Amino acid sequence: MSRRGWIGVVVAAAVVILLVTYFWNRSHYVQGEGKELSIGAVFDLTGSLSYMGQWSLEGAKLAEQEVNEAGGIGGRPIRLLIEDAETNPQKAATILRRFISVNKVPLVIGFNGSSEVMASAPIANKERVVLFSTGAASPHITAAGDYVFRNRLSGALEAGKMAEIAFGMLELRTGMILYIKTDYGEGYAQAFRNRFIELGGNVVAVETFQQGQTDFRAQLSKVTQAQGIEFVYLASHVREAAGILRQAREQDVSQRWLASNAIEAPELFEIAGEAAEGVILTVAKYAPNDPYAKEFNRVYRDVYGRDSEMFAAHAYDAVKLLAEKIEEVGYDSDRIRDALYEVRGYRGVSGTTSFDENGDVIKPVATKIAQNGRFVEIPESRIHEYK
Image (cartoon, rainbow, N blue to C red):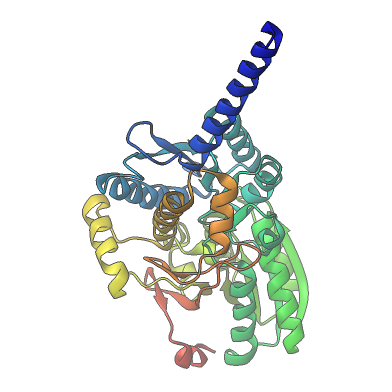
């Protein structure tokens, strides 16, 4: 064989070896001890959703510690790359791009705000990276793309349930909707309105306000001006909701208040005081005293000095579930995505997780009332007592 022929054979063999090595390493990426397996983590540690982001971070860190203390994944520790999105959709999208281009991660968790998910989803889908939200609830996320998942219940179910409670159990017929102008607020408002009207109710006015707004007198004046309003459905983050309720009390607004889940935080009572009393809300059901969640809540209390919140449980479950899937299929975004679509009945501390064809999770809805500085669950059989 000529020298040129031998060179061709050597080059071809080298290419084959490189390809085999590449695909072998790709498919066995979690095997053996050594390099950490990074998971991007985008939480709102500052801004109007910082309470949610802090809880999420705490739950995720507990899961990271447990996975690593148990030997990691195939002997390799996981490491959360934690970044603060500052309750800013553009910041969340920028962080995601950096995780993809610099850190080469196949998946990113967190994204407490719905607008953060909607801003980041096109990037995740284009770059084929799994985006796993532990806190975003907007119904718009259902159609956000093939690589987008969440173990947080869609707001369409919560808002629809609130409409059914308002019309059926509280016997309310005429209301107004007041919502924060974000993907979260718009999704909840639309879902509530559609279901309430479908049941035969009447929505006589819909008003919006901006994230970070502090003066709500103009919006509240519409409540008193409109005819026959029995209640206001408030889709809001907690700080804005607390300001609205406090100013409503100051302006002698006497209508009933129904609300979305994001008001469920201590800040509601810290800011609104007694004006928060009696607000009824629907939330994804979380039972920290459930036998399966009890040990998690005990550890959480030992570490952080307080009981776990739902968002901490969601983030904890997300890390544990994703670690399990990486161990099963490898550190590869397409395989992780496909494995998540197959999840049925995963038993976590936040409840049972199964994903549908849209990457949405289906979980029970609970009804609560703000009462004596706490959020108290109302058994469905007793909701009619509050009409």
